[in-house]
Image (cartoon, rainbow, N blue to C red; front, side):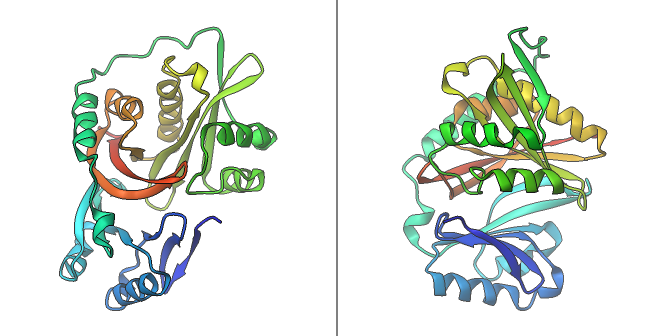
Length: 278
């Protein structure tokens, strides 16, 4: 059962048992005096163990006073001008602890040593292109092969098609007629930012820098659409993905501890961001 996205007063939240948390995805300042109580009442009712908020920097003091703490940031998230701050509260002490923090730190440090080297042309064995509705079925097949489970219903062809119509642009790489790698850009036209996400690469084709080629193609597309800020929330334990973002000029923005359920377990996630205008 997937978590749901819905309105809570004027704010938009993503919540459910899969991630065992509430994620406030879009904040409305008109709810400042009531939203925390509503969030915490919902968390208590459903027995969630974490609340994570994505809040404009100018609104964070109210939440800090209520026991939330900063886990990360994305500079220029709002139309390239105002920063987004990730605030969290752990409602179960164990949710806020991890015995892998030394690995998170090591992966970040290694990733940040990677040089920004221009990409060579993609091997003639591979073809990179934008995906369309006709590709949805094979996209789902690849996602199912790579992920045991996922926070959003990417195993549903209808979800893929519906998101294409609204605000997601998918890219794929083929070897012959076989789809071997995929990713997407989730666009916020309102705030002129895009999340670079949903990377999936067939295990036997890893090591060919396919994620970099996908990311580079998505960046060019986003720039052509007037997007100002790019970001990603990558698995902290995935050294290759963290290196991919750092080597293409993304900066580390913090770690969301025990935040997201992927492939059957709750994982910590690293924030990476990049300005399209710098």
